[in-house]
Image: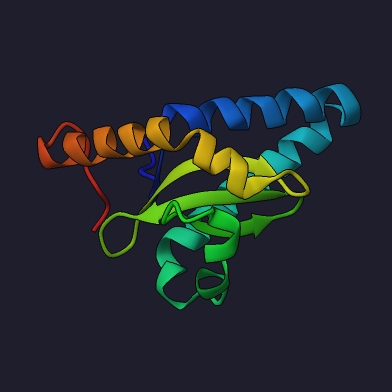
Amino acid sequence: MTRHQYFLTPGAVDDIREVGDWSLERWGKERTLQYLTELHERLEYVAVNFKTLENNKTSEDLSGGTGLLLYPVNKHYVAYVPIGEKSIAVAAVIRQGRDIPSLLQKDGFTIRRELQEISDRIAQGLINSPI
């Protein structure tokens, strides 16, 4: 089994499912698979390179004071936090054009809880953080 450089909160899993469902309805299986593959590749890229990404400095306005970092992937923003040196926890995947600060603030309690659960599971050795 391949170990990814990122962890998905339950909320992010739901978001990605919605992206897939929406895309499948509108664009078909091939284009949906291509989009989701690119999303995975970009998440891997962000996990390894988050320290040097320019958007980290400018995403504070979009994150609505939640402390989450944002990275654009096609028509979506990935909201994440670093975990370790070369891994991230993805809290949400939100379509660009939506009121991202409001959505992140509205879901802030759930996001913080899900991120804490990932950190706790890593600390307990229940899941392994790459590096």
